[in-house]
Image (cartoon, rainbow, N blue to C red; front, side, top):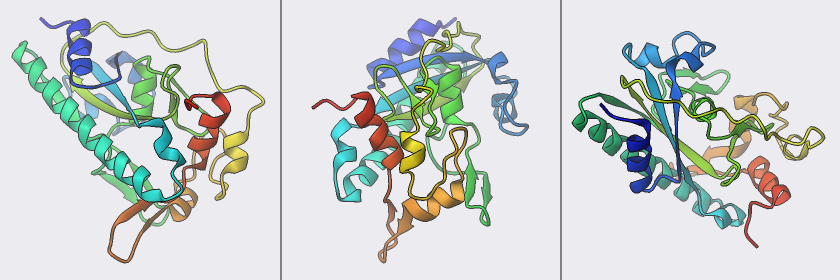
Length: 228
């Protein structure tokens, strides 16, 4: 039998900055088709881990460092998930890697709306790794919002971590909402069409570029999570 502590320690040893566990019962409100058990019927627990982007990357005036670092982090997270899945198998249980980014199964071209097979940010919240800010990003109390998320599903019944309940965005803070040039945020969700059309494009060589991160950057500057 494998324990939550063993799995978390292993993920951390591979380079994850944080790791948490969510029990399957916490996903009752997930949309039909996007629950962990819709992916893997024997799922009992979701293991979620975070990797922080180097803080100053977001301050670069050219979008390439931020874009390139984001894609590197997705690869790192997927490798952590794959190795952790192998580790769980060696302990007699099973682990299934969830992509930290693409591919999507669901895509609405008209609305430019994509949805991963499992919501990573909601999974991280349910694993006790932070709360969802008004900018819809996961915010961890130690790492801020500069975190990228990976996850695996397992049939091991593991001890879940407590949900974060004592921190939240300040009630009077609207800095991310007011700063969004596309007006894509309402404090609850994000209009992906408005956001994508402004912040994401392909250049003439066909490279994907993330060209706006104001909601993330201004939140960092306000909360002091950027080390001067």
